[in-house]
Image (cartoon, rainbow, N blue to C red):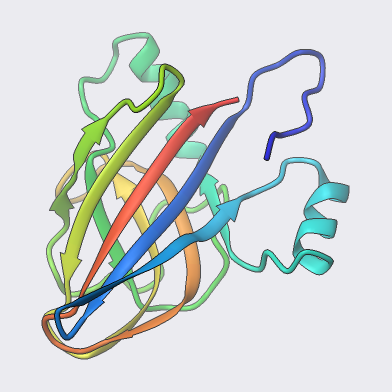
Length: 172
């Protein structure tokens, strides 16, 4: 799926995919939060006709981080993953998760599977029974900048269950 290009400008597209491990058995969830469509008409169609109810966004502070990275003003990577249990819809103005989980953030593995895509993959393990509804990538183990943020259908986990998230940031 490609974004509508206006004036030949490039856009960044963020996606969040996952797989869950319950009782030692992994199940692929695929893309759990589709990229937010910048065009309001297409966004309406995708949400109300195609049923894409969950969104992944590149946050405003994430865009600012990209510009700082290009200017070499920062040396960080968005390689820390965390999840949350609260409800809401991921938005560009977000700076944190909905009710962050009690677990510590995990440092993901960063790769560049193609020239225009940055990928972060990491696995979080539940320290108690909970339902996970959102996740994101950060530039630090605490604090830092929320770069990719996605909300998704609740995943009920027991203690020791895991979710492996893959966050992709692509220039389209």
